[in-house]
Length: 78
Image (cartoon, rainbow, N blue to C red):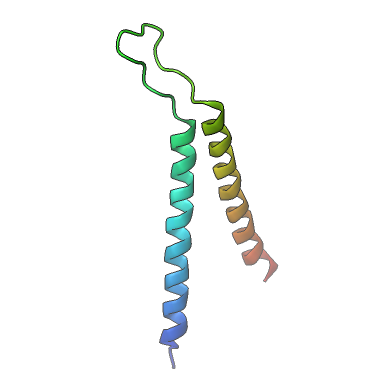
């Protein structure tokens, strides 16, 4: 049995980069959609994120969903 170590290394490298990128993108979505803590002396509590932050979070979530859908497509289509 022969193992192609170069191909195995490529698969490992691509998997690592895509996994770290996808987790980072999802983290951006979580941070963008998180509530901001209230300022000192503010009795109303936490405030909603700004419109731009919410739009960026939705874009990040959309890209995550697209990456997952593409991965499922690659598995099922073969």
